[in-house]
Length: 344
Image (cartoon, rainbow, N blue to C red; front, side, top):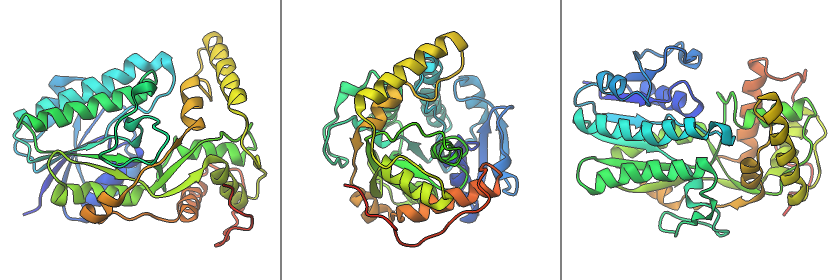
């Protein structure tokens, strides 16, 4: 008898891969999605659709099957524009609260919550699951709401109401990315990159992240958090690899922080007149200016998580984008080894 999963965020990047991995492992998959959600990436995957919204408690309670083996709560807003903060808080905080309450009421077996490595803030050193949190970045609503939402999950677990595991992926790359790092790669392709931000972080493969979600159901510790990182790289080096593969020029060195922040303020001021979301906000500028470094040793040991070479992840992302007609370049260049030295 197959195990049954209830998944939110299935129309998104990570969520769609979680659904794929569950199906590949023989699970019966139930998906919560809005009536307007685009589920094109799951066209060939059998699942039962429940129309609803994580911010609508009634729809969540009605949709969640009784005694479902696992709830995978992947849905989240990754917005960095302050004008959408209220909506983001409803999705990330209220949505998680609704999912936790529904899982308790439905007597769900295990709750797997997708968080982020940004919940540690910007401590300036490599973090592991036991590292103290830097709250100085909580003015960035994404950081704050992801922290608050995972605390909701962990509190319900500590109080004995829920059996939950929290996963904290770093920067995610791979096929199926319509709006995250693919947005940066489109800008490289169109030669619209104004400058390279000075920050960096760890990068993880979306397919390995999805596998870790399922392994967390089987092997994750109750109430435990798991960082899912990988190779560390600065954004300027990510741009260099993407530019090399698409044969497009990119900035060779990072732009000054003050200039990045000034550009963000200008773009945000213009957005007040146009109503259009700016390409760069003050929040995003700060995120792109810092190094966020994490250690994935715990996930590797307990969940069998593995990192993938950065060049492989970028190549796979760009190949998928080419297949989807998201790039203007007519040919992609695949080089297995760097042709230029990696910047420190």
